[in-house]
Image 1 (cartoon, helix red, strand yellow):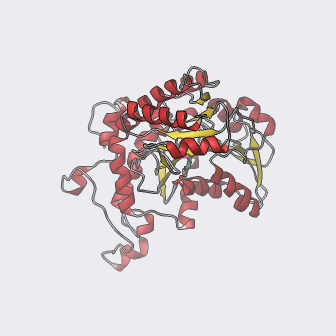
Image 2: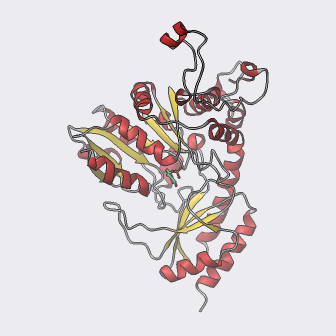
Image 3: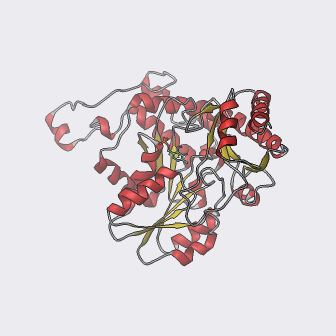
Length: 392
Ligand SMILES: Cc1ncc(COP(=O)(O)O)c(C=O)c1O
């Protein structure tokens, strides 16, 4: 915890990230918490065992390491509790399992991360949940889709790959009039750039795999809830036997310390590159909400404190061949999934899963994850890639 006369909420974000979750004097003054590898926890006597009257009882229920990370995230999110899960996708599926049952109806934004859709269309459907997709710009009109059995509205802003911004406060207001739980996949912004619970979201979801890890070497997820939803969420987690190991939790806590500085670099570099790309003749559009040209820029500016380093470009013409040529010519951008790591990545995006938000673009859509390399080197790489892709 931060030793300050000020409440933690008044401290700067990098100060918070430096101190959140830390309690050095709980462990001999060492700055970092110990990595406690655990299944069995011993009880001093039979009576304590019978009543489980001690802080730690079994590895699946938490260790000093996972507790340190949970309290760090609670400080950042302003949440009543945080759960740690083995991947970002698990951070999506666990809260849905916790709040939905057969006969319920759930509304998903159509621009969701594709594996979220796969989970909804397969397992949730199999368990008798009714699935419906809504367009990302629906705002307050979500009220028109609410049925007597609607239990959850699932949001993700910006949308995966196409970066539409949702009017989260308007959606929350409509949903809460019917006691519907609002969940948000907030991986792109992190709590640094969008503090979802302050906007009325009940449950916020993060793939810790991305910016919190920052090094493309850990799969991890975090789910944080407000007071109203915390107990139900935690009970489901315990029932599912979901947990993480302390080694990974430690690495995520370690990643948080530098996340503000890394995000700042990702943000500045991505924006410089996005502005440069906007000027290139081979580019029809840049899908980055912090650009003034983005149709949702005003909404982004109203609600977000920053932008991370992932956005897409729409090529002005061409198809798969040009997209592949561009990807194959890039030297610094790796071809791989995920984002939030220190290295730049590019992927040719497929949007064939969209239903109500389906639209046609001028050319192929390429998603770029801007890493921590020097910005000019990335621009030079993109320039030679674009020239090669459209060489006659
Ligand atoms: C928006 C979003 N949510 C969740 C995930 C899932 O994270 P993980 O790869 O850790 O399962 C991803 C992964 O790309 C993502 O982009």
